[in-house]
Length: 110
Length: 115
Image (cartoon, rainbow over all chains, first blue to last red; front, side, top):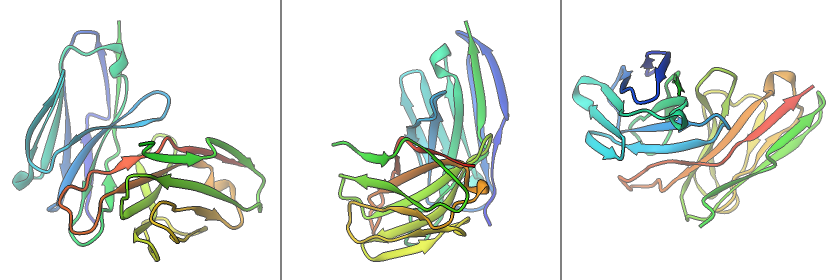
């Protein structure tokens, strides 16, 4: 089956720093989503990004589907950015099944 | 819209007990699914449904049953709970069908402990 790998597995930043999280996938996908799981366990939709680049405030994401990777950029990080970031890919076919990566755990310190 | 709702938020069971985790969505989504998340891991798909009356298995279906009698509801049943089913359970929904806009939305989760 498809493999979804995220790097780095852990990231520690000081407030104000920038970071780039990477998601590699081993097969063609129909779409890709980025989620933030906050320290309370809630999954928050960040981006629905099958291809191209999107921006939302301090966060932006780029997916290059032909090269099978996606990047999530966090600029001027804040302590509230702490948590785990997951990418998830949807395969083809008539279902919306998502395959999740293993996540990047981000800790932002003041 | 309430989005995707799940009940209960927390549950403790003894080995062998049965229970049903409830999931509902008010977005008229065709596609619904259940995932489990074990500590330090990503989410894994248990069961999914592409519409009322249609369900299918995901990656880790053993020990779980589902049914989809309405578009809105997608309950997950544990017939005989085992400690290995201790996990956080998430329900999700998306428009599904032939739509190309299939962003998935997740409920708040149910934290289940089986003793």
